[in-house]
Amino acid sequence: MKLAVVSDSHYAIDKLEKFLEFLKREGIEHLAHAGDFVTDGAVELFRRFPELNCYIAIGNCDFGESIQMMRQMPRVMIDSVVYFQLEGKNFAISHKEGIAQRALKDQPVDVFFHGHTHRTRIDDHMYPMIINPGSLMDGHGFLLLDLPSLTIDRRFRFD
Image (tube, rainbow, N blue to C red; front, side, top):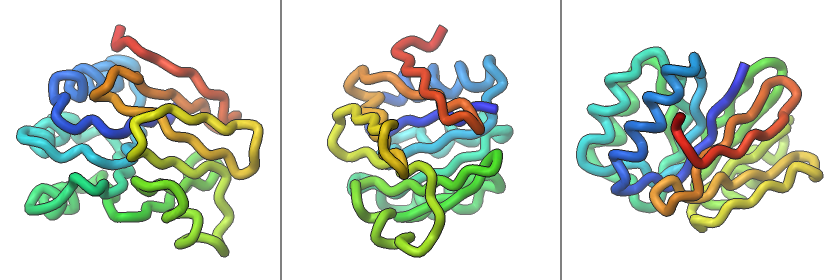
């Protein structure tokens, strides 16, 4: 099983669409988005991929009706901090670093995801791991996390 990790797609709806199409083509059913996803067409785009289980942190650029619309989708967990489990591993995601760590200080967490800085950070030598996939909008690509091994595959292309 793989978990796709992305952040800060902002106005790059074309890149987000190619990314989601790649996930469908590859049979990847779990997506962690570390925030700043809302732009015109984002909600409609996510609706086209109902097979995806989405764990989405609300970013500082995410607001308005789109968040409520995403909350109504059956396979979407969206909040300022999202805690989820897959393949025996515990994950937490927030847009800014430290928010999930403070909110879940008493919970077991194997990996913390965050975004916001638009800079990739992979601290996979630490426990818990801390990962910022960088900005999809800025061309930093995305990460595929193999579960349960937590092996990271960094990708820049959608083919």
